[in-house]
Image (tube, rainbow, N blue to C red; front, side, top):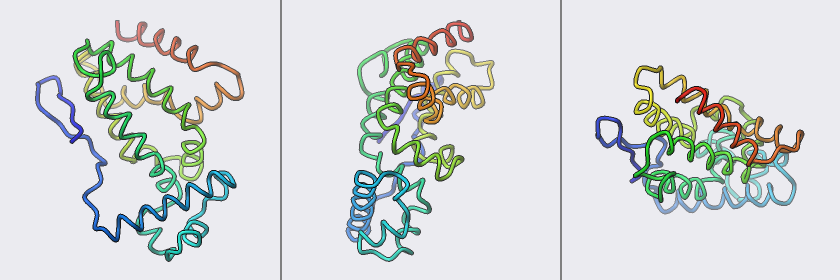
Length: 205
């Protein structure tokens, strides 16, 4: 189970973890995700609609809606395996991203790793954000990032409104912003991470 320890040493669980699935539900989920992945690879994100996915998967469109809700949630579900690997890295991987490092160093390493994570999966994340701009903030991935960030902030600046500051810091790594900086302005991820360091140094030290 993925967990983090807060400033009081208590173990807390990350939200958004899926419950165990029945075998038939797991098969349907796999068929739907495989169909969405094929559409995304062959025709681009604009081709990924609930009807198109249902047709390719051979599953009723109502089942697709019940399982994923909307296109943004379906696209984000394609990231599930890699997101789990990312969460494992910042929860239990080597320092400074993982435990056994000062919270400032962990926060910096986390925002660096998240920048790379978003840049690597830009196509899917941008498509999901365009499909439903506000869905990002209720997705299990984001809730886990927010909990991790706010937990570290509480250790660094306990007097701060850490819930809001966490959202503001995570706003530095939105897919649209990273896409704009890297694609439209030609700024490298390394330069973005250096600028994040500057902001953290200015505001947290």
